Amino acid sequence: MSTRATIDRIVETVHAADDLLVVSHVRPDGDSAGSQFALALALESLDKRVSLISRDPMPARYGTLPGAGRLRVASRLERSYGAVFVLECGNIERPGIQGLESQFIVNVDHHHSTEPFGAINWIDPEACAVGEMIFRLLKAMNVEITPDIATNIYVAILTDTGSFQFSSTRADTFRVAAELADRGADVSRIAMDTFYANPVDKVRKMGVVINAMELAENGRVVTTALTRGDMRAHGIPADGSDIEGLINYPMTIDGVEVAVLFQELDDGAFRVSLRSKNAFDVSRIAAGFGGGGHRKAAGCQLAGPLAEARARVLDAVRKAMRSRGTSGSKI
Ligand SMILES: [Mn+2]
Image (tube, rainbow, N blue to C red):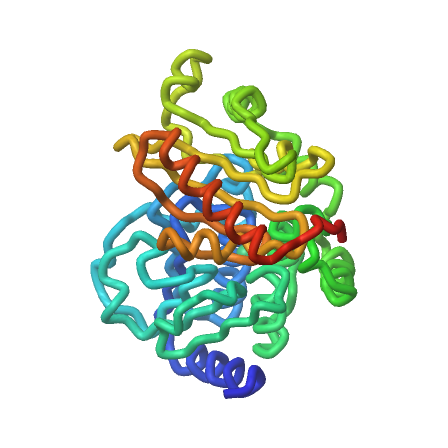
């Protein structure tokens, strides 16, 4: 089905339903939060009844976004809805919410590995953020882009493009961003609220991540870890689900092409975040361990201990690099 036809179906679905739910993935990030709030505000402007549910609470920097107050934290649906938007999720498990399977699902995502688990599936790997897709959907629905909606979509795009640095940033990205600024998104205030309002523990975690760095493959790969022991040693509460952006600083090392962060979970397993600077496709590494994501940003989960998890991932990266025979060319 063409993109146009898919969007038309989504618009029809919205018009036909009164009672809509919008969910996104566990451990919310800027794209999931901004997209959820923007869509909820837009649907409300069409006089729809809208519910917003997340399994995890919002990180503080997104909890003050317009519309965030409507969000309810829950891990189970109590009833059925006219339609349920599932935003930025690779599969039906990603929201961490029970009871989704039986709902009429509209799946909106921009990961190329996303499964078509919805009744309607709009998957656009070209989109720089789900927020960009929401922008296009609102246009198709003739919804007015208010300053509150513009703010949310701008946050989604700003964070998911790494502040307009990733290769997902196209000329169109700036056209959308420009329109959002025209519609009242305060770009400098949003940047301050998003990147200069970290809890002190988040910055301490960054210290741990930097101290734990190890280079491999002649400096082309950097691995690092956030273990429960290191967190304790630095007096950081181990509640820490918020690791958004922590992997970015190791990525700034000259010559590094791939960065891997191992975050120890309560059960001793490791959540693995992978990033790539060039054409190296980390989503294939993640997929090899049952995860997924984008070519330049992906994740998976591995059993501990850390040394073993690290060796397994490094081995997979090494094999993939050698079979590609890359020279590590920069882009
Ligand atoms: Mn995204």
